[in-house]
Image 1 (tube, rainbow, N blue to C red):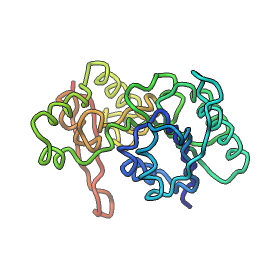
Image 2 (image 1 turned 180 degrees about the horizontal axis):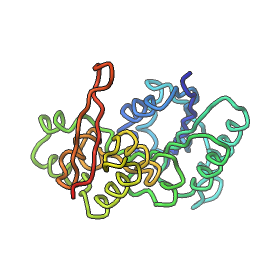
Image 3 (image 1 turned 180 degrees about the vertical axis):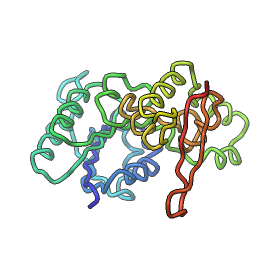
Image 4 (image 1 turned 120 degrees about the vertical axis):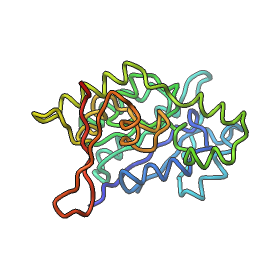
Length: 246
Protein backbone atom coordinates (compact mmCIF):
# COMPACT_ATOMS: atom_id res chain seq x y z
CA UNK A 1 0.00 0.00 0.00
CA UNK A 2 1.36 3.41 -1.00
CA UNK A 3 2.11 5.88 1.78
CA UNK A 4 -0.04 8.99 1.97
CA UNK A 5 1.94 12.21 2.35
CA UNK A 6 1.10 15.68 3.62
CA UNK A 7 2.91 18.33 1.59
CA UNK A 8 3.23 21.63 3.43
CA UNK A 9 4.90 24.48 1.54
CA UNK A 10 6.31 27.68 3.03
CA UNK A 11 5.37 30.13 0.27
CA UNK A 12 7.53 32.86 1.80
CA UNK A 13 10.76 30.87 1.45
CA UNK A 14 10.39 28.76 -1.70
CA UNK A 15 10.40 29.93 -5.36
CA UNK A 16 7.56 28.76 -7.59
CA UNK A 17 9.77 28.02 -10.61
CA UNK A 18 10.30 24.33 -9.76
CA UNK A 19 6.81 23.43 -8.56
CA UNK A 20 6.13 20.90 -11.35
CA UNK A 21 9.45 19.12 -10.85
CA UNK A 22 8.98 19.30 -7.09
CA UNK A 23 5.61 17.55 -7.19
CA UNK A 24 7.00 14.88 -9.52
CA UNK A 25 9.83 14.28 -7.06
CA UNK A 26 7.45 13.99 -4.11
CA UNK A 27 5.37 11.43 -6.00
CA UNK A 28 8.37 9.06 -5.91
CA UNK A 29 7.97 8.70 -2.15
CA UNK A 30 4.22 8.41 -1.78
CA UNK A 31 0.78 9.77 -2.63
CA UNK A 32 0.50 13.51 -1.75
CA UNK A 33 -3.07 13.45 -0.46
CA UNK A 34 -2.75 16.78 1.39
CA UNK A 35 -1.11 19.70 -0.45
CA UNK A 36 -1.09 23.13 1.19
CA UNK A 37 0.93 26.29 0.73
CA UNK A 38 1.08 29.02 3.35
CA UNK A 39 1.60 32.75 2.92
CA UNK A 40 0.07 36.20 2.82
CA UNK A 41 -1.59 36.14 -0.60
CA UNK A 42 -2.17 39.88 -0.50
CA UNK A 43 1.57 40.39 -1.02
CA UNK A 44 2.87 40.80 -4.59
CA UNK A 45 5.85 38.47 -4.11
CA UNK A 46 3.51 35.46 -4.01
CA UNK A 47 1.81 36.33 -7.30
CA UNK A 48 3.88 33.78 -9.28
CA UNK A 49 2.59 31.00 -7.05
CA UNK A 50 -1.01 31.86 -7.90
CA UNK A 51 -0.49 30.78 -11.51
CA UNK A 52 0.60 27.23 -10.62
CA UNK A 53 -1.65 26.36 -7.67
CA UNK A 54 -4.65 25.17 -9.70
CA UNK A 55 -2.44 23.22 -12.13
CA UNK A 56 -0.99 21.22 -9.23
CA UNK A 57 -4.07 21.10 -6.96
CA UNK A 58 -2.29 22.89 -4.12
CA UNK A 59 -4.56 24.50 -1.55
CA UNK A 60 -3.49 28.08 -0.60
CA UNK A 61 -3.79 28.96 3.08
CA UNK A 62 -4.05 32.67 3.82
CA UNK A 63 -1.93 33.82 6.73
CA UNK A 64 -1.68 37.52 7.51
CA UNK A 65 1.46 38.90 9.10
CA UNK A 66 0.14 40.23 12.40
CA UNK A 67 3.44 41.80 13.44
CA UNK A 68 6.04 43.33 11.15
CA UNK A 69 9.26 41.31 11.11
CA UNK A 70 7.55 38.16 12.42
CA UNK A 71 6.72 35.19 10.18
CA UNK A 72 3.17 34.02 10.91
CA UNK A 73 3.44 31.43 8.13
CA UNK A 74 5.72 29.26 10.28
CA UNK A 75 3.21 29.07 13.12
CA UNK A 76 0.32 28.24 10.79
CA UNK A 77 2.28 25.41 9.14
CA UNK A 78 3.34 23.96 12.48
CA UNK A 79 -0.20 24.02 13.89
CA UNK A 80 -1.61 22.37 10.77
CA UNK A 81 1.15 19.76 10.78
CA UNK A 82 0.31 18.71 14.33
CA UNK A 83 -3.42 18.56 13.50
CA UNK A 84 -2.64 16.32 10.51
CA UNK A 85 -0.31 14.17 12.62
CA UNK A 86 -3.04 13.42 15.17
CA UNK A 87 -5.60 12.74 12.44
CA UNK A 88 -3.62 9.60 11.44
CA UNK A 89 -4.46 10.23 7.79
CA UNK A 90 -0.88 10.23 6.50
CA UNK A 91 2.26 8.13 6.94
CA UNK A 92 4.73 10.89 6.11
CA UNK A 93 5.30 14.59 5.63
CA UNK A 94 7.07 16.69 3.04
CA UNK A 95 8.12 20.05 4.47
CA UNK A 96 9.05 22.47 1.73
CA UNK A 97 11.04 25.38 3.13
CA UNK A 98 14.56 26.78 3.49
CA UNK A 99 13.79 28.01 7.00
CA UNK A 100 15.48 26.45 10.04
CA UNK A 101 12.40 27.30 12.14
CA UNK A 102 10.93 23.96 11.02
CA UNK A 103 13.76 21.93 12.59
CA UNK A 104 11.81 21.16 15.76
CA UNK A 105 8.71 20.24 13.74
CA UNK A 106 10.66 17.74 11.61
CA UNK A 107 12.16 16.22 14.75
CA UNK A 108 8.75 15.94 16.43
CA UNK A 109 7.15 14.25 13.41
CA UNK A 110 9.96 11.71 13.20
CA UNK A 111 9.63 10.98 16.93
CA UNK A 112 6.04 9.96 16.12
CA UNK A 113 7.33 7.41 13.63
CA UNK A 114 6.53 9.32 10.46
CA UNK A 115 8.90 9.73 7.54
CA UNK A 116 9.91 13.34 6.92
CA UNK A 117 11.19 14.61 3.57
CA UNK A 118 12.57 18.12 3.38
CA UNK A 119 12.85 20.19 0.21
CA UNK A 120 14.58 23.55 0.12
CA UNK A 121 17.26 25.68 -1.44
CA UNK A 122 20.97 25.05 -0.93
CA UNK A 123 21.03 27.93 1.54
CA UNK A 124 18.94 25.83 3.98
CA UNK A 125 20.62 25.69 7.43
CA UNK A 126 22.17 22.36 8.45
CA UNK A 127 19.95 21.79 11.54
CA UNK A 128 16.78 21.54 9.42
CA UNK A 129 18.51 19.29 6.88
CA UNK A 130 19.69 16.73 9.44
CA UNK A 131 16.31 16.78 11.21
CA UNK A 132 14.74 15.18 8.11
CA UNK A 133 14.99 11.57 6.91
CA UNK A 134 15.83 12.87 3.46
CA UNK A 135 16.53 16.39 2.25
CA UNK A 136 16.41 17.37 -1.43
CA UNK A 137 17.79 20.60 -2.84
CA UNK A 138 15.24 22.26 -5.07
CA UNK A 139 17.98 23.42 -7.47
CA UNK A 140 18.59 19.85 -8.69
CA UNK A 141 14.97 19.26 -9.69
CA UNK A 142 15.29 20.71 -13.19
CA UNK A 143 15.40 18.83 -16.47
CA UNK A 144 18.00 16.21 -17.30
CA UNK A 145 21.44 17.87 -17.62
CA UNK A 146 21.91 16.77 -21.26
CA UNK A 147 18.54 18.23 -22.23
CA UNK A 148 19.39 21.49 -20.50
CA UNK A 149 22.80 21.72 -22.17
CA UNK A 150 21.16 21.50 -25.59
CA UNK A 151 18.86 24.41 -24.87
CA UNK A 152 21.04 26.63 -22.72
CA UNK A 153 23.42 29.35 -23.83
CA UNK A 154 27.07 29.25 -22.78
CA UNK A 155 26.27 31.67 -19.97
CA UNK A 156 23.53 29.40 -18.66
CA UNK A 157 25.90 26.43 -18.83
CA UNK A 158 28.40 28.27 -16.67
CA UNK A 159 25.67 29.00 -14.11
CA UNK A 160 24.64 25.33 -14.10
CA UNK A 161 28.23 24.19 -13.50
CA UNK A 162 28.40 26.49 -10.51
CA UNK A 163 25.32 24.76 -9.05
CA UNK A 164 27.00 21.31 -9.20
CA UNK A 165 28.87 20.43 -6.01
CA UNK A 166 32.42 19.13 -6.17
CA UNK A 167 33.20 15.60 -5.00
CA UNK A 168 35.47 16.61 -2.14
CA UNK A 169 37.74 14.37 0.00
CA UNK A 170 35.06 14.59 2.69
CA UNK A 171 32.49 13.11 0.29
CA UNK A 172 34.94 10.39 -0.76
CA UNK A 173 35.59 9.47 2.86
CA UNK A 174 31.85 9.32 3.54
CA UNK A 175 31.28 6.92 0.63
CA UNK A 176 34.35 4.82 1.46
CA UNK A 177 33.46 4.39 5.13
CA UNK A 178 29.86 3.55 4.22
CA UNK A 179 31.01 0.84 1.81
CA UNK A 180 33.16 -0.61 4.58
CA UNK A 181 30.21 -0.52 7.00
CA UNK A 182 28.02 -2.79 4.84
CA UNK A 183 30.66 -4.81 2.97
CA UNK A 184 30.98 -8.60 3.13
CA UNK A 185 34.20 -10.50 3.93
CA UNK A 186 35.55 -9.77 0.43
CA UNK A 187 34.98 -6.04 0.90
CA UNK A 188 32.10 -5.92 -1.59
CA UNK A 189 28.88 -4.11 -0.73
CA UNK A 190 25.50 -4.10 -2.46
CA UNK A 191 25.07 -0.59 -3.84
CA UNK A 192 21.45 -0.42 -2.68
CA UNK A 193 22.60 -0.91 0.91
CA UNK A 194 25.33 1.69 0.44
CA UNK A 195 22.83 4.24 -0.87
CA UNK A 196 20.42 3.59 1.98
CA UNK A 197 23.08 4.04 4.66
CA UNK A 198 24.45 7.16 2.96
CA UNK A 199 20.97 8.67 3.20
CA UNK A 200 20.77 7.88 6.90
CA UNK A 201 24.21 9.32 7.61
CA UNK A 202 23.66 12.46 5.53
CA UNK A 203 20.01 13.24 4.63
CA UNK A 204 20.98 15.67 1.86
CA UNK A 205 23.26 13.19 0.08
CA UNK A 206 22.05 12.93 -3.53
CA UNK A 207 24.05 12.01 -6.62
CA UNK A 208 22.22 14.77 -8.50
CA UNK A 209 24.03 17.32 -6.32
CA UNK A 210 27.20 16.24 -8.13
CA UNK A 211 25.78 16.17 -11.66
CA UNK A 212 24.79 12.48 -11.79
CA UNK A 213 21.21 11.25 -12.17
CA UNK A 214 21.93 8.02 -10.28
CA UNK A 215 24.41 6.75 -7.68
CA UNK A 216 25.84 4.02 -9.94
CA UNK A 217 27.38 6.37 -12.57
CA UNK A 218 28.65 8.63 -9.79
CA UNK A 219 30.48 5.76 -8.05
CA UNK A 220 31.72 4.42 -11.40
CA UNK A 221 33.28 7.78 -12.25
CA UNK A 222 35.49 7.74 -9.13
CA UNK A 223 38.73 5.78 -9.39
CA UNK A 224 38.73 5.07 -5.63
CA UNK A 225 35.94 2.53 -6.08
CA UNK A 226 35.48 -0.67 -8.05
CA UNK A 227 32.04 -1.46 -9.44
CA UNK A 228 30.86 -4.97 -10.31
CA UNK A 229 27.62 -5.97 -12.02
CA UNK A 230 26.05 -9.37 -11.30
CA UNK A 231 22.93 -11.01 -12.69
CA UNK A 232 20.31 -12.05 -10.19
CA UNK A 233 19.14 -15.66 -9.96
CA UNK A 234 16.41 -15.17 -12.55
CA UNK A 235 18.71 -13.26 -14.86
CA UNK A 236 16.09 -10.54 -15.30
CA UNK A 237 18.13 -7.66 -13.92
CA UNK A 238 21.61 -6.92 -12.64
CA UNK A 239 22.77 -6.29 -9.11
CA UNK A 240 25.46 -3.68 -8.59
CA UNK A 241 28.21 -4.22 -6.03
CA UNK A 242 30.99 -1.83 -5.10
CA UNK A 243 34.17 -1.99 -3.04
CA UNK A 244 37.03 0.26 -2.08
CA UNK A 245 40.17 -0.10 -4.17
CA UNK A 246 43.27 -1.04 -2.24
